[in-house]
Image (cartoon, rainbow, N blue to C red; front, side, top):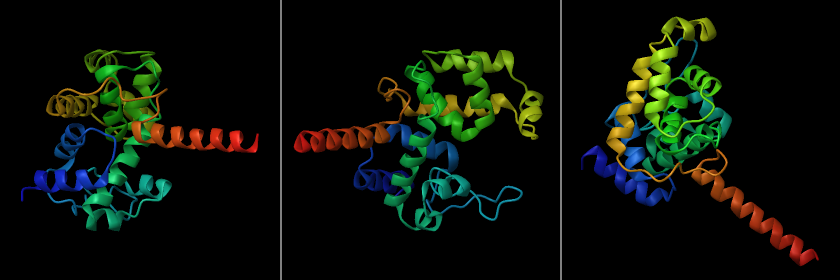
Length: 203
């Protein structure tokens, strides 16, 4: 099977809440091929980004994700990718709606320094185009270097986000509850229901 077929089979088994078209578009932008792909490590890192979602080993450590397991198990790879996306989604204000929200989830992965600059400079947005235009008008590679110490072309990252959104097609409205990603929101809701149930029983 082509890698996209493998991806869809793993997605169905993973039972995550993120739309398959968005996750496929993300994987296409990162590395259209085998899930066991590992990127060349960045300077100072022992391991490179891994899997369909190119999960950063440092982020994996924070989230308790086994990057070797990611490479070996496509279902675990998608579940781990969804976990990472939840982490990015939790950083985005609820004032970001529509494609602005979906685009920012990807931008937090592509270049966190730029994502933070956007959210500091754009209090709210209803579309990715608004964000894209702001980046084009207000951010240079030297601006990013002044903060992170490394030069990055902001439009290269913005264009990548645009490609992901174009490939993904129609997406649900924002997919967020107060800036929290879909899967995380479900977990929190479940905990809340359990807590309310416990209070009722104790009462």
